[in-house]
Length: 393
Image 1 (spheres, one colour):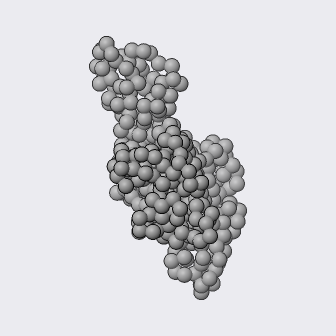
Image 2: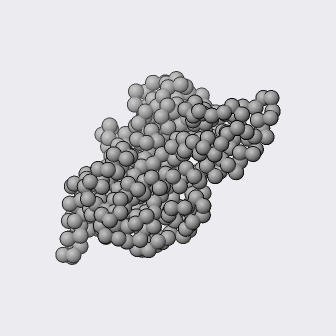
Image 3: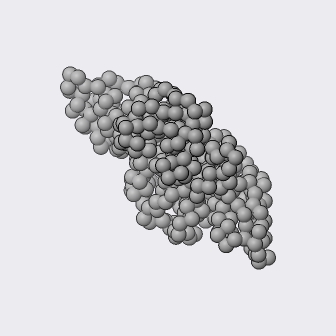
């Protein structure tokens, strides 16, 4: 399962975002380091279900009348403050938790109402763009410290006549999510000495920064967009194109209203319908959320998740079935499973995603939409429905 991690300074709204996205009970309060122990939960990204191309909807619990929700892991840990890579605050604990994250959702107080430490100030008194830079720097320095701690081993390996710096660095950086291709591309873009003994701190920090950008891409969640000066949102967007205006509190209010039977709303919808009885105060609160949604096309929480998975990580959704005619599994369930795969993935990759035994026994695959066999090197696309034929079936 893909893993997304929430980053940000204290009081930016990370825990509220986490609670809204997962509907898990967590401590949400207006003081630094509300989160001490990491919270791990399951949220979902949103896409169109292939059942829209059939006469009837599939009825899967994750399909809401043709809108499919695909699970991903969401991690929320302690807020970061400047100096986190040196252990300040709960920094080391947080940064170490980032190791297995595929992408980072940086929750920013776009209203500028909290300082660099997360302490409340007046709206607009702090520049949220500064928060983007410090988070990136803390992550870079954290990764550079990992490289430094392991550099002596690379220097020892370099004395071997068959030393391969690509292989040595890949072995070192696998633990933070780097692949052989990531390392090869990083080295291609960097200017560095052939002998690792001649590398300086600057070389290692440049390597760490490049690897961080490749393995921990960042989506900026411009939270508290309802109170944010428009120029703040614009400047955040200029700094990081993957910036999504959001109101985590608004999304949480909508989710709770759905649970109470007060509104009809699916996460990611641009609006909601009032269907139950609410108090005047509740109605006023919901209408305030509606105003923000009208301005930004929704609360931004679902859009941020979708942007991270489908746009930044370049993943798509594929649906394995056993019956290519009815799009069902062995029990007759229509489109029971959905898997997120990386760009360029093939039917064999889908087979391995289902189960390692299915992948190892892979024979061939059938495109269920067109009812035709497809080659092993065929690149799958969003919404593909695939029958995998394997000796393990």
